[in-house]
Length: 499
Image (cartoon, rainbow, N blue to C red):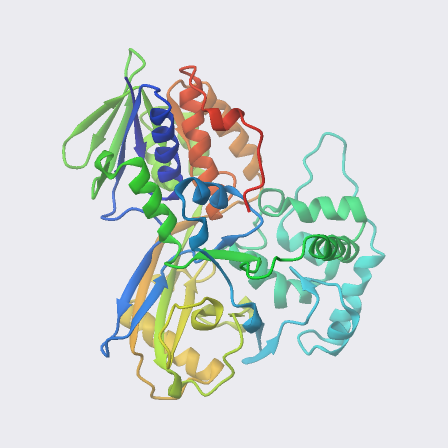
C-alpha cells in the first residue's frame, strides 16, 4: 500500500486528496493522510453562515467568492461530486462596476473589456478619463506591436505594458485597480506573462489591444447566437459560485475523499527524505508521519520553509516568490440605512485615490439568497502591496475605517450601526507573480521532477484562481502516482465539455 502525505487542506490539497481517493476507488493500493494547520479545511475558501443580533442569517465568503466560469476544473469536479446543480450565477440585472474618482463614483463605461474600450460613444461620454487620456488610449490602434527577439520570453510588467499601449491615466484609473487588484499585486513588478499572457498574445496577433478585444467580443457574440441559452436553464455569467458559498465544493471534496484521513489543527514543521527514499513529516504536536510521497499544497512561504530540509536550491527558488497580506470585511446594514442605488456589483478604488478600502462588493445584489430581505450585505477589502500596515490594526479599528468609508463613499447613513461585521485576515495569503516568475517556476518544476515522491501544488506557481489551484493539486497527485505506474481512467479519457 502506497502512502501519501498531503500538507495543506485548501482547494489544492483537497483536489489532490480527492484524486488519490478516486485512484483507490479504481482498486489502486494508495492511501493518503492530509494535515492542515488550521482548525478547518478549505483554506481561502471560507464560507460562514452568520446570524445577526436580530436572528437574520447571511451566507458569507471570507475569501474568494467566485471563479471564472470559462475555466472548467471546478465544473468537472462538481459533476463528479453530483453538485453541479448547486452552482449559481451572478445577478447580472444588477451588474455594474463603479470606479472611485476624486472621492466620488464613476460608472465603468459600457464596452470596456478589462481596461480597453470597445465602444466609441460610452468612451467619449465617460468622465472616468480626461480628454487627453481618451486620445492617448485611441493611439493603441496605431502604436506598433512590440518587437520580440526570437527565442526570448515575451514579458513585461503590467505597468510598462499598459503605459506603453494606452497611457499612464489608463493604468492609474482602471488597469491598476482592476487587473493588479485581482492579483493583489504591484503593477510595476507584476509579470504579465505569468498572470495575463493573453494580453501579450493579443498585441502580437492583432497589433492592438482594442482590435484584439473587439475580435474577442465578436467571437463571444457569435457563440451566444449559435448557442442561445435553453429556456429555464441557469444563465451563464462571467463568474460562478455555489448556492451555499464557495467552501461548499471543498467540503464535498473532503467528504468524498474521506475526512477520517484528514487532520486539522496540525502543523507540519519539518519534512525529510530518508536514505531509503521514503518520507517523514514531523508535526508540531510531536508526531511523525511516514510515507512514500509528499504533496506540498501549502502556501508558498510555508512550502519554502519545509523544503529547507529537502533541497536548498528548491527552497531558495520558492523564497523568491513573495506574498502580500490582505483582509476582507463582511458587513451588513438595515436597508433603511442604505438610501443609495443598490444595482451594482462592485467598487474599485485606484491607488491614486489613497483610500484604505481598495474595493467593495455588494454581495446582496451580486449573488442570490446571501442576505435576508430588508438588509444590505457588503464585503470590503483592505491591504495589498501598498498598504500592509493596515493589517497591524485590530478588527474593531479596521471595521471602523470601513464603516466611515462606506458612509463617505456610497452613502450609508452617518451613525448607522452594522447588524454585524466580521474581519477575515489572510496573512501572506496572496503570492506575487513578479518579473521572472515563469522562469523560477520552470526551475522549481524541473527540480521537483527529479525528486521521486515529491510534488508541489497551490496558488504560488501557475495561477491563483480556484480552478488553477484545484488543477495543481490534481496534477501533484498524478505526478506521484505516475512514478508508481498508476494512471487513472479519467486521465486517458477524451476530455468532454462539462458546462
